[in-house]
Amino acid sequence: MKNVISNVLAVFTAHGSSDRVVPPTGFTARLTVFTAAAMALLAVFALALALASGRLARQWGNELARTSTVRISAPAEQMAEQTAIALRVLQTTPGVAEARALSAEEQQALLEPWFGPDLPVANLPIPQLIDIVETGDGYDSAGLRLRLSAEVPGAVLDDHTRWRKPLVSAAARLRLLGWMSILLIGGTMAAMVTLAANAALAANAQVIAVLRLVGAKDDYIAAAFVRRFTLRALAGAGIGTVVGMLAILILPSTGETEGFLTGIGFRGSHWIWPMLIPPLTGAVAFAATQMAAKRVLGALR
Image (cartoon, helix red, strand yellow):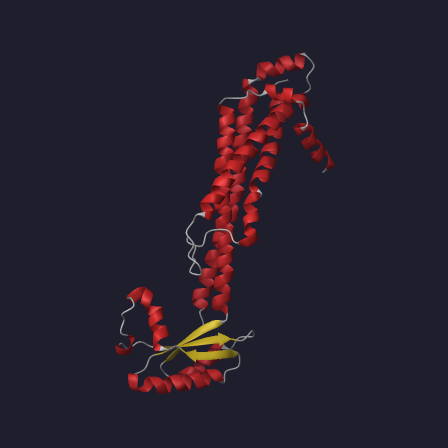
């Protein structure tokens, strides 16, 4: 670890005249800055996707894990009686903290996004819904289904298991995809910087030969390339990160009704994470350029 730190300090405290080994302009400079900016911009969006997916997975899991629903389908004249029986069954079931029949207004609000605000709920044979809140230990869903089928034939228990698991699983996989994308972005960044450094070293083969003739060490020559390309990558990553954070910041907010697409963004302390992208990009560029310089300089002997 001490050797790594000393190498980094040696590179960035080297005399500025060593930078003249690397051409100050050309396609390698533009390629490095553009690649770093583009990769940083993509990394910001991948990071936002990963964090938003994890946040949504926790939100959906928490909201659906302790809630369930009983749906009662019965003739209109029997609906009130069967609802009352179902409520008594639920109130005497261990693990049920609260059971409440939804009002007509609440059921209309649930249907409004699909059928509009003018749906005549009172005139339609819509099932009665009972909202159940579980205790921390939960209840025996199989036993409750048996009791409901015996006492309330028209009742169906939905414990949200078939909805919760696929949603949470999809969010978790999308989060994994986001983190894998960040790793691929870092690898692509390292490859592009390596190619640019190789091109610059090959283009300056004659300059390197002359420097060796006058006594320049390979460490001195490599430091010039490492310092120049690391600073280029750091500057490009800084530009890409700022643009990405501004793009995330101006995304429209949907409040509490966020989903995979509308909920992408950073919340609270998560804004610190994208700020780590430029220094990490600089570290990747430093390592990639140093390895490339040592390999090419060894081949040019």
